[in-house]
Length: 343
Ligand SMILES: [Ca+2]
Ligand SMILES: [Ca+2]
Ligand SMILES: [Ca+2]
Image (cartoon, rainbow, N blue to C red; front, side):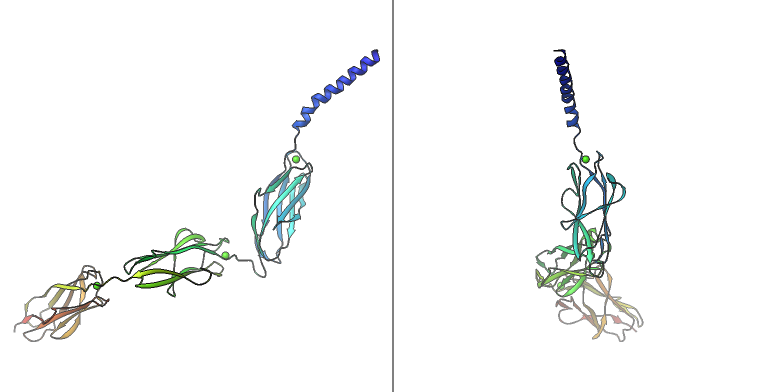
């Protein structure tokens, strides 16, 4: 009886230890390992380049890794301990890769099944592998267009395109709008040279137009938008031209001596603000160019000075053109008289 009692006590103690110990075991859950300082170097190269993937494995529980791997394009490459200890060390894989754009991520598991991935979602772009020379990724042109789609000869048309070079080391050699066959340099409007919006503004002649965009990236490789062909636009309406006006003419002084300086003046007014393509005065039938003395070209005072007026009686008239087919003789018919030279 006494022995049986002792056995019962011993069994109870064992049971009590088990009951007490069970929560302690539950607290000791497995922590996932960490992947620190993930790196791939170099990110650009050729098929002869050795690409080195490195990552630090650290397990908070001190667990050994069951696997440390780098996945390139979805294929696993085992990584080996390069320095430190197995449960807290630097792992490395040396890779050679076929030409093209690759992507990679790291994956690890500890021996108790805890896992980690870097990045946790998706993959890092790279390395970029060229055949003989380091791979240059072509720039990307998007959002090409012209504002406005319609307008007149007076409107300013702005061509815009977004340029992006993912290599982002060297700025583009050129970003151009080809308008009706003529290339025009575009200027950076917003963003950075390698990831920005470029503009070119101009006026256009009446009629239909067409355009496309060309960019040379920092390595000199060419891309176009669209990839083939061209874009139509804008449709530019012509604006009727107004003839220029001439008014307020005079010659000073109206009376003079031989060798006096005479100044002929006239005001030019063009409703379209066209500058004169021709500004002439005919003195005694001899043509002379007039020059602008005041005001803007499309609405200014034009003069001609001379000391070479021989004889007593003289005459003159003006003839201007606005460069768009508008002409003006002043007076419309006949001549102005003057100046009178007295001896
Ligand atoms: Ca662990
Ligand atoms: Ca590039
Ligand atoms: Ca005009």
